[in-house]
Image (cartoon, rainbow, N blue to C red):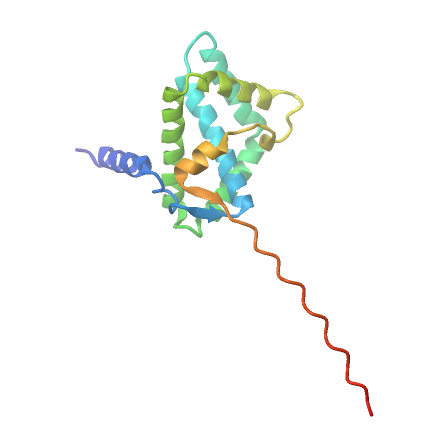
Length: 173
């Protein structure tokens, strides 16, 4: 067996395990979840462009390319932020495991959800509309992916009780 085949097999096996890319039940700050959500969206669109067939297949692939071109600066910035976040959680290999797991989850969803291609086509159309100027405006059912990845948003820290006012100085006698 070639080294490449072994590596692909191991990566696929690890990625298929829920929570392998991120610690099960791990919480992430909102900014990190937003970065992961953008990656989820682009992965979902890529899986659809490669796997959704029919009358619009070529059109879908071309429109996906247009989507990537339209949001390229955002995607590059998001990729750098993702690498920065993952530097805290095991580095680039851990990030690559998460990306592979996302692709596997999106493909599983494509096969299981009869509306996947139609829904993803709508997201792609919205992303390409002139009114959409930020990639974050394109919706994603992130609960599906974050749940499967075993991550959640960290709860906001509890507010500290208000400090008691200092007692007035004692009166001089």
